[in-house]
Length: 440
Image (cartoon, rainbow, N blue to C red; front, side, top):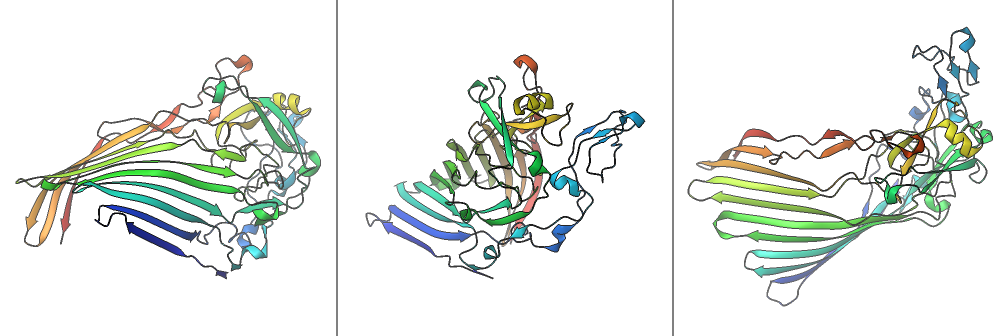
């Protein structure tokens, strides 16, 4: 059982005693809920189900697009002489394909006691002032400090000896940070480490060093007006950024992904991450036309550019990161590493991230959208209803909501990237909706 204290306090002060200027402050401790994810489900016997997915090198020698190897045999197989395929050795956890897997070991101290649940401290300071009657301005500073981080290690691999590294230069591409060309270091398990089945262990990050610094802070500005004749308007901005630094522990454990069970190794890339300040703009106006009781309203939203393509859930990608999956021939990797990575084939490829929390790539310009509503207000006795038309995406903006994250490899830096960054989906086009609402 968990035991926690979650104090929360708030205070307000009328600065001049005339009810027009107020200082407000609030502080609180908030906890993450115990959900159906690690560490709470890692000890569930259901996690020991038969492994039904494997990743290993494969050459389709007969070009029939069928794996003509014995996938239950972890050894290297070359059946091309008899019309089959070539399959690289299944190493590490991949050798357990078709077998019952082992559940993650969880530090018992994580699962009970006082002050054990992750959470955050939130506090805000606000100044609110009435500019003229019915018009107020509000400025607030908000900060959230996060605490109580779990990490997953592999007890069977010594983080200091289980990995070797190679370095490649990112492509020269004006779309990449500073035009590309920066070094990318990738950590891969050694042959000896790969041959050992994993024994994953979930525990506190503080078992490996000081807890990371992780917080978000920002400033909000809002102007509200409730004018006569039925006009209400509001406009505001929100500017903030996140800061993360776990460099003290990033190289001290195997950095196993709790969802995919794949280890990134002692990869320090992006351990110090400072987001750029991003600003959102929002506006709202509502007006009821007198005498004819027609409601007209509009909402405006303007959002900052999005960071390009995070890896799909469960992806196994060398180098971590969260953008631009560079498809590199294994021959290039072997030249940098001195040999092929364990389990890789000479004709295969390795997917490497060429952007991370330091070398960020953003997709496009700001994304702005306007929605409007027109409605006739109807009154019958004590009921109030309206028949209305909603116009979503009034300007029919077509900003992208998804992008190709595959960055094709090119020799000589010509035509770099292939289709990388091309939109794969766009925002819903303008549409109209008719509705009827009754209030009683």
